[in-house]
Length: 602
Ligand code: X8Z
Ligand code: ZN
Image 1 (cartoon, rainbow, N blue to C red):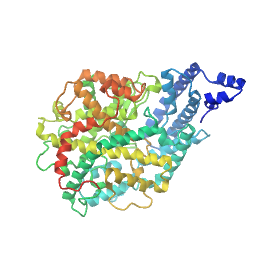
Image 2: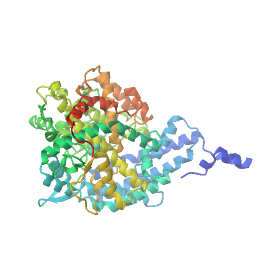
Image 3: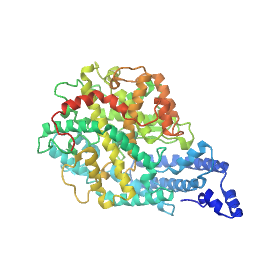
Image 4: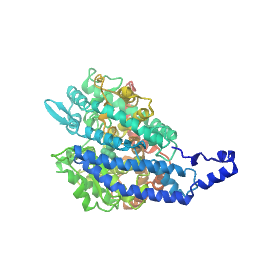
């Protein structure tokens, strides 16, 4: 909402009588008033934040009607306050404030993921919808072979089964959980849009895109630019994998041309394909190890996986995790209650009360996820000395990229051998199998990372109506990922609701960005460590000096525009896919040769 003073532009002042102009000038807030406002707002939000975080933690680790109520009350109050402060912040638009105050005013307006309308009761209603949707997803179950199964059980089947009928049944089964969420989701979209408009944004999608130190439209164009850099490589991988699936299942299940059946890719959302390495493994060069098996053989348990992750970060010079991390984290799924199993990392007090919440299984995927989540925690702790409004990632993509960057080293055979999981690190002859495994996760992910918020941007802008939710989703899934559902979707389907971040209201473009940034970090880190071999064989384990420089970037939090943070560590100021291209270059060449004679694309 624009205040009266906002309208007091130079032109307007000139049109006024001298007396009216002088009054308008006098009423314009001073820089000192702006700073005082920001300081007070920051203190008020900080004071509420521990309470909100604790309520949210209790609900996420013990879902009941009561904990949902408690969380909604706390979040509703925080939302009402933050919305009020964001509207007040607009009063200081155009005031010549110092750069810190200017940045804090901007961050105040962008504080909420879903701002509420200012009217009485709206913040509480929106908070209740959020808590309810996240809980419905997290407690979702469906009948399979006479048993009620959870998402975790369903993911195990998607990962391991090679029976197309079973895969289809489980894939469709999980999507029976989401249709009941559709009406609530539509109501949430309406409320958040009303809130965003109140803050001067055209809709909530524009608010989300405004969080990257550039105009919302420029950010959307940036994501398209980066996607264009990597799209040919994705198409190459898609082509190769499709041919292998066709070899394995035959034309009746997976034709050799056209899109890929979404349930055949080893993952509930076809977002990372590493679980079907066995199907796509190159015929001539074998991979001598399988991380799932190495972990089981070495008797890893979930806690040992987290300790191993901690040791990686310690080798870079990060202080050990606090005792409270071990006492308060949820590392495995509790048997006696409902929880949010989707992995996350928390900081409850802005300082040292860091925790992860996972339902960890002993497999390569979760070994990786542990490094991912701990990256969030070390980042949170690194910027712990920043003022409250600067506690955050340089942008949300940075937050996701820290742990992924660690994971790139932690998955190298060299490192696995250093920590005793592998007897012997394979040589260059296994480069292609290794890169293929990595690409099944990292390259396959890119179009998915891009499209989830392309869908939400269309939903928030009103371009896609609730009746069109599902068709619009599949249009994007087919256009960008080249996949299709295993059969026709029912009329009431709400498939986007079957992906955590939609009912969980977590913006998703961050993961697309992170998949680019992590390779920029990796390339810079390996250069700092003096590595001059191929990027994919570099591990920065034990590189404490590099770790110190990485930490210097992490300590900045969101105190500066993100290009400053990127530059501090990499010397680069742009999101740039040339690092991921460098890393995978040998594989891209190899895939092109394999795809000879295939009709790539869909
Ligand atoms: O949600 C996550 C993390 C928590 S921040 C486990 N990720 C995305 C997903 O699972 O969809 C990591 C990769 C993408
Ligand atoms: Zn994350």
